[in-house]
Image (cartoon, rainbow, N blue to C red; front, side):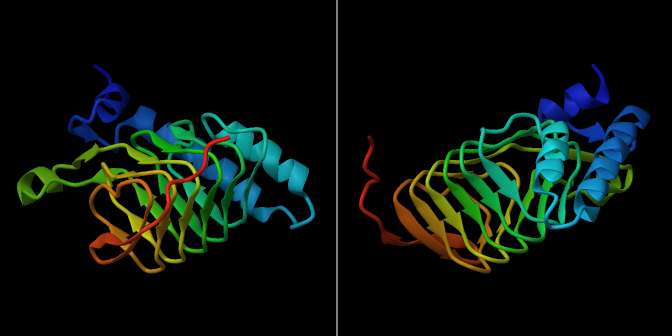
Length: 189
């Protein structure tokens, strides 16, 4: 089993594996190129983002600066928007539904490190997927940790640290993030 296969399977893997390092380096070069474009070069930015990302809807927009590790493990639904300073560490799949809005300076981190210092210091790490439903608004400076699922029709308050799953139809805030208000279920067409 390759280190990439271990990574995607949620097993401990060596992040410094040369093949993984090469994939990250290519992704960082594409992110850098994307982040250097003029704000009016939206078509070129979108084209570069389509090279970086695994799957996208027809309509999406990501403001610079945007950074990710591999890119190919990220799926965006229709009408995805991320404001400035979005970071997605996609060592495991990160999936966003339709109509997701991400405010500035948000991070989605699938990578984790063992609690045992000997194992951690050996360079091994693990990754857990992140899933965000549809019709979600994520406030500024939110951090989403490995293995979290955020339901649909959810608002995550600014500054929250999402350490566990958030159900559908709620406003959730805090550190750790937790539901504080129910929302009416979204209407389906």
